[in-house]
Length: 110
Image (cartoon, rainbow, N blue to C red; front, side):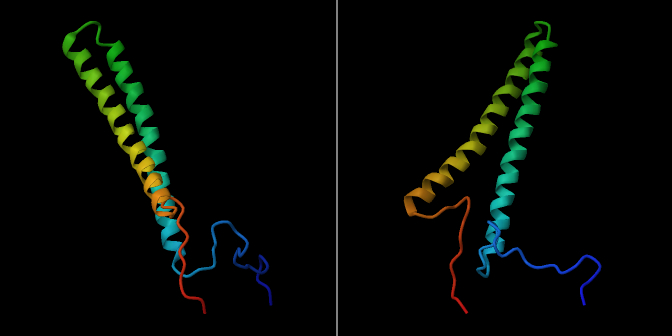
């Protein structure tokens, strides 16, 4: 007997479902890293806007201007670190023939 909403079946022909045991964990970790990169990018934009506002409102005060420039440089360095982590993962993946950012796990078949 079908439930109120009908029969629910697993999405077998889904791009995210490979059918291999253990692949879900690595897919989850890959998605977490992508979300972390997106959050880092959004945080960078917010920090640059706040630092720009601090720079504009400094009114020529050398101390406030220096603090604003420090925030700008720290934001740029942080974004470069996050971006270089993704580039490094991609380069290492290409060198060793594995896709680190979108892994496919192979295992014994039943």
